[in-house]
Length: 349
Image (cartoon, rainbow, N blue to C red; front, side):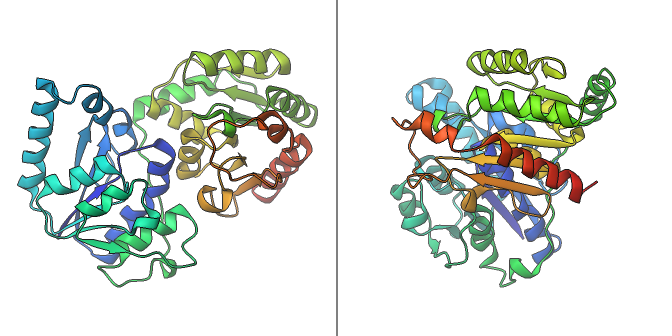
């Protein structure tokens, strides 16, 4: 059997979706699994032992230039590549217009997607041939993905031990090891301060206070601060300056390079973001902070992860901008984050 997974982006959801690979391999030994992913995120799946073929797409470029010759050529090439594989099943985990169109391009008669209430864009329903309703217990995004792919196989994913694999190259591992060789011998914390939305961020004062408190408890510790763009870099430079000794702003890393660094960290503290979920997929303990998004739906699960949700009555609002943004940030207390860090370190020492 040959199946196709369509889950193109974003990074955090892509990391959460990786468990479907292990499920499919266990449910149907010998299955071939292909995956469609955005070009910018291909490193998450590149070289994965359970992925037979990776198709990459550039939907943002296509949207900007829908009538350009390059767009037509890329879409034509994608259609040819998808048709050539003759899929038995196509699973649309993305649930929007672009993934629906990719579904249609496959030519597969068995295209499985979400019911309308679970779609990002309702128009997606026109491109799938079977839509799977979620159950009440499918609150977490990982369970929704697993529910979707499990239906044709009739095997309960909740009764199966599932693991997640993220490949890191030997060169990236060596670069990460070289970085760690320059650090002190104490614990290494990675602060994932940046995210795509301001309503997901924590206050810079909170990060600084957390760093200072960790250094008081663990004098030889190091705080690594990655960044994704110039705005994030400016923020982490200020945070590192506020923490002082022990804080280190990282150089720019490509995705797998950052994964190698996070894999070696003792613990990642971060806001809801792609790198935070990638760290969890790598098996690194995490403490994650949630405001506009819902920790119950996307927070890393398991004994080595802790989540903190803003207690404001309007938290989990999913808003991109909010006039209560600063007040909401202040509801996540340094003491609560520190308590989670110390508990995880104690439980997994």
